[in-house]
Image (cartoon, rainbow, N blue to C red; front, top):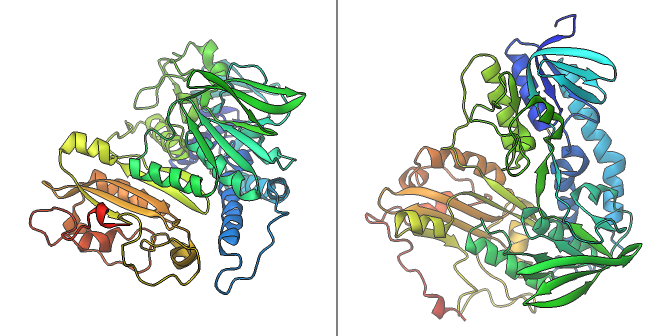
Amino acid sequence: MGTNNEYDAIWFGGGAAGRFGAAFLKAGGLRPLIVEKHGLGGECHVCRCAFENYVSDQASMAELMRMYSGLAWFPEIDLDNISMSKVVEVYRNVGQPAFHDAMTHQSEQQLKIEVAWGEGKILDKNTVEVDGRIYTGKNLVICTGSRPIIPDIAGTDLENVWTYRDHPDVRIDPKKMVVVGGGKIGIGKAAMFAPFNINVTVLEKYKCLPNWDQDVRNYIYGDFKRRKIKIHEGVDVREIKGNGRVEAVVAEIDGKLAEFACDAVMLSIGLTPNSEPAIPLGVKIGKNNEIVIDKSCRTNVPGVYAVGDVAGPPYFMAVARKRGMITAKNIMGQNTRWDDSLPLPDHIYLPPLEATMVGLTEAQAREKYGEVVVIRVPWGPRAKDHKPLTYIPNLENQGLPVCGRVHSLNLFFYGENRNGLHKAIVDPKSRRYVGFHHVGDGAKTAFQYLSYLLQQGWTIDQMSNLHEIFLNAEHFVQLSRLIAGQKELKGYAAQVDPEEYQ
Ligand code: COM
């Protein structure tokens, strides 16, 4: 470790991009410095990935308790007094400090990465000031993250109008909540709040989750309908009304103004990069307010890189961490570029389940390959003369048990058609997979590797040669093997016509 204030690279921001980029550089024998005001790990442990994983787990518990209450051997469970504000209070007291300590410990103590704590100011591309102390670096990496976009309408400053940043600080239990924006954050927030006895309505300007496969979207629409979470698409939100605190959202639907009474609003219409601190350096700024970078994460200013959300969409932690690594490699002279051929998996919180995807949607696959083979369960609603006969009164269930973890069979038996969805799409000519889609639990792990297998041109014949461990979270091995014996791939030989279903 050096003894002066001269570094190989200054990482201006200690979120996912800065923390992982600095670690990679340090591991390579160079000397990084992270400049950070709040805590390492960025917004993750405060209000994003760690926080949302925690809240989603609590929402799953609440939803499952509601589902099982009084069925089969389960006792009646009183859920009248469950509370989102209590959930986040626990996180504030336990989760935030625990994650904060873990990340600081890992970076500072274990990895011995130097951190300049305090408010940083970029003086020039080699010089940063932190609370009066001067640090110099051969390279500067901007990783200042992003912030939620606030729509330019009246009422966004009313009390109980939130963005994801306010979620950990929620101190009331709303009765009626409007989520503005039906992207993956908005849909996830709706699914997280609803189990806590909150009546949720999603207002989306265009259509929800446009980049997701239609079967997954249909599953979500159906699931939300069952749970009485309302979705309105094609809705232009005009105003948020209230007297000090929010009372209603005013929106235009089909040319008419409608009012949605509510006591809380979650704004989730997108993110904008925090590129402002780097503007004096002369870096090029793009149309999304992002710092424009090339595939090597270089800006137009030599020696200045930008990584993480500040470099624009896609706003994924994996992209941030990986671009941090790519930057470190380039600083070390290992000419490295972002690899477009490796498809990015994506994920939505959908407690008690989650949705995951990688590769092409069915519509994209048909456009690119013409005919495709779709491996999918459940195929549709229950079969005509399905067995077992109804054991639990009023359950309209069954497809196959498709989710993972401990609830797989519970959801199969009691899940009110909430036992998920598997879908793999194959190009029949090359026999290669082109996309995977899933609603279930625990499949995220597999999707990390499926991304690589897609890139490698993984075929149905290779998949059917794997060793599955039953039950697993996504069942792609055995489902593929059912048809892999076909010389000319056509899909399920005895695919039942949907008309056959009741
Ligand atoms: C996101 C924070 S989990 S970090 O990538 O671990 O720093």
